[in-house]
Image (cartoon, rainbow, N blue to C red):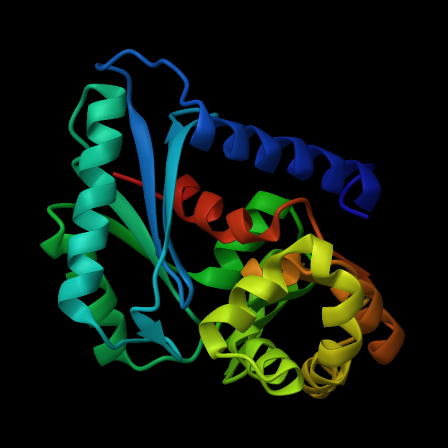
Length: 281
């Protein structure tokens, strides 16, 4: 509970917010070119996402581009990352008929100061002025409006775990496991190339083939999460990140950890929205 509002009510509101962001990606909203906006740039392991909100955190527009320029929280293809961010920025500027000058970005928990600077440098090299660098689980928690619990951000290559108490992060960790490992298992099981396995995995029509194959990997992820949350009196786990788009992943985590597990609508967009919410000037 947060105040007198139930977890279900909070989740429903968050889901409506996320759905609104999803809708503006395909159909951007009109906004006066003089009105203040907030921009967030998320350099993920599998996707680069830019989200745009108005000053009241109402979604305006967004862009998603599949890219593997980051590995384990480290930018491994700097020039490609800059090029993609710059192209997405330009596309949004044309759509909104205005320049995007300021942006926030985010980092996974536990990475070095040097890697934090590299991520910031990518965004700045794409002609943004970086206003804030926030850690990813904190960004996600602001979208979900949670004060207590564990936010588990399962990306392509890493899983970030942050535990919140009274709205403050009291523990964070980053583990080298994610959707990449699920795709490797699918590739091995079906005897196909990795790229084909990645596409096969994310197609909902292949659920009955994919899920039994990847379930042991999800259970291993759940075991990692359980080890991190033990001793912290965590009552609820919140799953975000692109890998959590996989149907029923939350059921496996909840069954394994015996901790209530919640997955919001389109978990891929949760952290990117939270980043733009924190684009302070």
